[in-house]
Amino acid sequence: MTGRAGACLASLRYDTDTSGTGVAMRTRFAPSPTGLLHLGHAFSAFTAWDMAQAAKGAFLLRIEDIDTARCRDEFEAAIYDDLHWLGLSWPTPPMRQSDRQPAYDAALTALSDMGVTYPCGCSRGDIRAALSAPQEGGGHQPGPDGPIYPGTCRARDIRSLGPGDAVRLDMRKAVALLHKLPVAQETGPDLPDLHQPSADDLITQIGDIVLARRDIGTSYHLSVVVDDADQGITHVVRGQDLYSATPIHAVLQRLLGLPTPVFHHHRLIRDETGKRLAKRDDARAIRAYRAQGLSPADIRALAGAE
Image 1: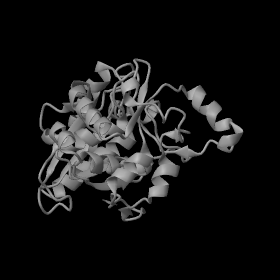
Image 2: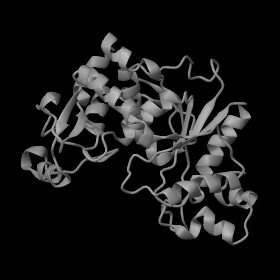
Image 3: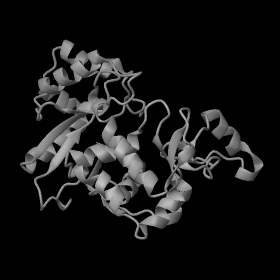
């Protein structure tokens, strides 16, 4: 990383070895206030809380509210109320992503200074059309964020960024800049114990992911990397549905000179048909179980977090 980029991100560094021996364990629960918490959220929060408690560490809360069009104050209030009812506590005030755009801007500037970003004006329809063209093989190869971007705007210079553009990471340039690819430790159940993608995997199976959406100014991938570093998170606890995003985060952490935490991807809570719970599953909302008279211990049992 260049000195200029390092200066931009100096405030995001913390001194630790992520094995957990250099600093007390710090976990986090990071919900988005776009609906009520359900059993799956309870399981994730309990897992992060229990890990921190067992290690005499810290459990932190982060409100991931960058998508302001979908987030609601009443859902944020319900998050606090439900988590307190479950018996969890955290340092206050919790981090809120909507307050942190300057930090994301600094990270994006650092990446652009490295020459690994470019503006993209493609809509989803444009991407589907490009992927259906004969020269692209006619397929929609899935990646962590959906169909892998075909690189239509890759030749554009970041200085041509316009108000209707997103910002993408040029994965090929990023891999070339890294020299040594990142490795992330995994402690989740039933998963490989290392995230160790090859250069080809990163380029062909992940591709040029979005770093800043045109309507938000950041993205999930960029914001969580910056936030985890700023909160000093040593162990990222989240569901197995985000397992494929971990190489992206490890690449961004290496580019930005930030620590790579240990990752723990836990099992998902599913309904009777095997479908993963979503926020629209109001019947399994913690609020609904509370109304039925269940206790926090009952929620632990239902979620399998005993």
